[in-house]
Amino acid sequence: MGYHDKEVVVIIPALNEEKALPFVIADIPEDAVDEVVVVDNGSIDMTPSVALENGATVLKEERKGYGYACLKGIEYATQRSPDIVVFLDGDHSDYPEEIESLLKPIVEDGYDMVLGSRLMGSREKGSMTPQSFYGNRFGTFLIKLLFGFSYTDFGPFRAIKFDKLISLNMQDKTYGWTVEMQLRAVRRGYKIKEVPVSYRMRIGRSKVSGTIKGTIMASYKILLTIFKYWLFIPIK
Ligand SMILES: Nc1nc2c(ncn2[C@@H]2O[C@H](COP(=O)(O)OP(=O)(O)O)[C@@H](O)[C@H]2O)c(=O)[nH]1
Ligand SMILES: [Mg+2]
Image (cartoon, rainbow, N blue to C red):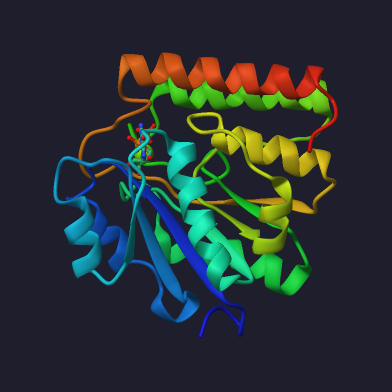
């Protein structure tokens, strides 16, 4: 099983995604992946049972926050110690069938981390809000300026070698998760690649970039994370 005999675990943080999850899980190429883990982040809908019915392993993380959910997934994956972990949102904005374009550079070309870039790929009109589009551009511009590394996006769909993920020692509990992973990977000198991924309108309602509170919190947290890592040079 897995991709070219590599053991692959997919982690999906999910908050009230009962409508989208069946499609997300169904579109994950079965032969490329060994286990799909949905981390229910205190949903008040049928997210956990829907995930279970669709063949996923379901974990619960009551503490609200994207990072908390991802950390829970990592903790679980540690028992299995897979070769590669893939993070994927539970809203059907990403195309799970594109997972192989994330796995291939790791397996064939020795990359440590491969990020799906929505800005390099094709986006359905309206799928990324203007604040998300320009926020990502501005944030990646700052990273180029302060760290000298060129990213184009902070998208959620990404693959990383499991041992490399563990040694990143991820800390962020909320919206800074994706950018923290990218900055820590740069600091560690990882071999990083971005590949284009497609992006479409989500199923169900947005909790982050489609809400005022989510946009403000996410922008604040992303900028704070960038400056924090720029100022406090050593990381553990
Ligand atoms: N906002 C938020 N999203 C969470 C949380 N836990 C998991 N998620 C998931 O994070 C993903 C991204 O959220 P989404 O609403 O699509 O944000 P958007 O892509 O910026 O519109 C979805 O899969 C959510 O279900 C949480 O505590 N807060
Ligand atoms: Mg989304």
